[in-house]
Length: 140
Image (cartoon, rainbow, N blue to C red; front, side, top):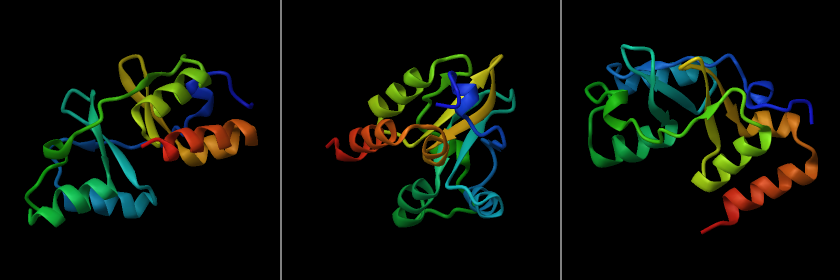
């Protein structure tokens, strides 16, 4: 394994969407960055949650809400994160326990990056990756 900590595993090119920004802006940012999720930060630059492309579709559009009037903060969910110095095993366990595929990494009280399935695929041995996928997708 190439890294021993969450910081070693994470993608540091993570950009927050501010809680007061609209979901149409969130969707534009996701398209521009080619990502499926964004951490949501408040005016204090602290993590408030995470929003996914699926959240926008299911919790806004499918419910007849207007994405140009609904804010990221309105849908802020999943305040699950891990410390940058946590072990890779702790990060995997947190993702498995919470059935999530993306995990924000916090360092010095601020978001430092995000661990995604792509990061796991690049850094984990095949058997460990297969075990993670089985635990996250097969649990019901």
